[in-house]
Figure 1 (tube, helix red, strand yellow):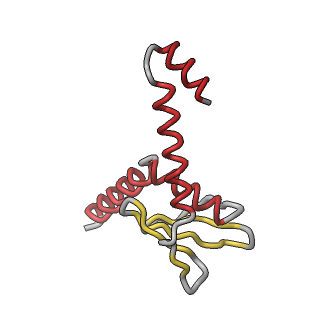
Figure 2 (spheres, helix red, strand yellow; figure 1 turned 90 degrees about the vertical axis):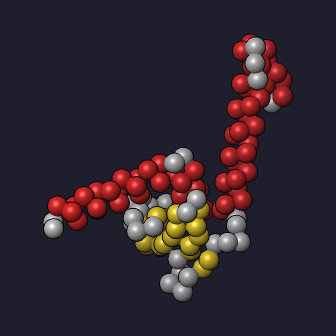
Length: 118
């Protein structure tokens, strides 16, 4: 991979290739630590929970071989074939910033609806 990075750096006259590769490896390392973290708590109902970036993540079994993740008060709708897949999907969603944006929008809509009903 170093040869490809060197070639990319030479072609772009910068370190874009090397930096992008380092960022990607860092992301993969963070994801690996997240899915294997000892901070995951097994709950009495069989679900797993953890907090990441201030967001409560809950992984539940919806059927044999089907797992979903919930974020704070928002219930997930996508089934994953394994717990590992659900953890990876939750990590990617939270890390991308999309989870925080979704939850903020959801809270804003709930607040607006509450004000309209008064």
